[in-house]
Structures are given as structure tokens and as C-alpha cells.
Amino acid sequence: MAWPVAGSTPGDRGQAAVETALVLPLVMAVVLVLVQVGLLVRDHILIVHAAREAARAAAVEPTTEAASAAALAASGLDPARLQVQTSGSRATGGLLRVTVRYRPTAAVPLVGRFFPSTALEETLTTRVE
Figure 1 (cartoon, rainbow, N blue to C red):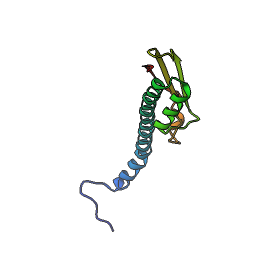
Figure 2 (figure 1 turned 180 degrees about the vertical axis):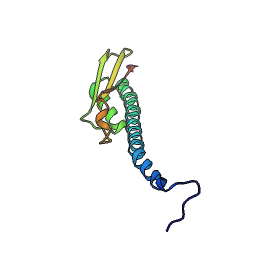
Figure 3 (figure 1 turned 60 degrees about the horizontal axis):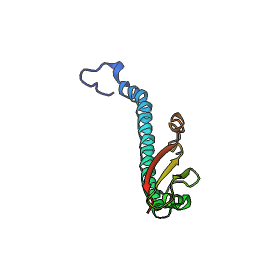
Figure 4 (figure 1 turned 45 degrees about the vertical axis):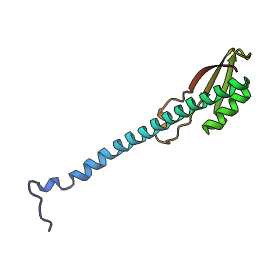
């Protein structure tokens, strides 16, 4: 026979287990959402870095191929989901705009489908050397 805990009644013995069973799925869902948001923030930071590197490469060699290669090398993102575009003047001293777009995947299986599949984009303008 178990000794009762001070201040408890016989009906309170499984209350903590029931409360844990009710709250644990909600806590886990919040943790998974935070992980998914963290992964999206990481992808955005990588896109900003890729755009900077693409703009630097395009300043020296104003071609879309050079900008795209620099963005891929700097970021390590999936090449099938990364798109680099250049527009503007390609003459020395002119302004060249580099746009990097990336469509991230839902990395967390359970909560990823609740996040809309939006493209992350960063645009930088550089002077051609």
C-alpha cells in the first residue's frame, strides 16, 4: 500500500500524468515551429550572403554566369532552387543590379506544410569595375 502524499486525495494520483499527456503535444508543436522558423532565418541569411558574393563577382565580370557561380559557391544552397538574375549597365562605371531568389523547402515534416512556400529574395546594386 502506497502512503498518500500530504494534501492529496485518492483521486489526484494520476493528475500529473494526464496533464503532461495533454500539454506535451502542444509543447512539441511549438518547438517544431521554432525549429522551422530558425531554418527559414538561416536560409535568408545565406541568401543575403549569396547576393553579396554575386554582386562582388558581377562587379569584376558583369555576367549572370559569374554572379550565379559566386552565389552558389558562397552559400551552399540547392542549385535547383537558387535563381540569380542581373540587370542594368554592364559598362565600366555603370550600375548593375543582382537579384538572388531562393525557394526553401519545408525541412520539418510535421509543421513545414503550415508555412507557405514563398520565395526568399535579396537584391543588391553594384558599380561595374
